[in-house]
Length: 266
Image (cartoon, rainbow, N blue to C red):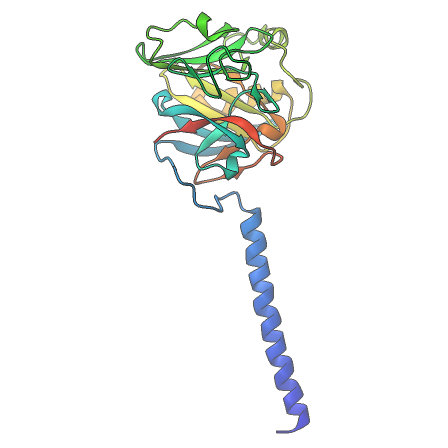
């Protein structure tokens, strides 16, 4: 075989290797950029409906619809997308301490009852708290500071997640109430998270993948979630803490760890 043909053959082989490696690199980049779950989750859930909606104001919403009996809270202290559960981020926190109530059947999610940072209270201020009363089969938003103030039929069968009142039935006063509850960064462009429910008792967990003000987020939810039948809800921690993990998508926020998540059980 002549030297010329050897060079042509070698060039062809080299080109083939480059094409294969390029294809593998492109596939890897697509996998890393994909919203689909890139890892095995030990405790996946199936009893939910995932939808992705875009509001007329440009807010892109990722929505999990489920029944409130399918909810519990987990203390994870890591990014939700690194956890072994499906769900979204919970309330506010500082370092390792929960600043928002997170109580299931009378037990705080992150420590002992009445211990600072355990989730047994909304620290500093009374704030809107989403409450599932299992015995009454009813969701409500109650503005409280401590778990002892919650109005439920059976204190061993309920959950309560603290946040900021959305006041979905009062468009005139909602912002003033949110400000009284010290909603952080309400007028800034941030990622957002909320939990809302409709008149039939369905629960919707909502995380945005676009940034906007609290008002724009609220408007987008009213327009796109619950088919005009929303009853009420709460804003949860936002910005880099706005996170979701389900089979259909993963949203890591800014990759920060969070203390507590709202978990889908089944």
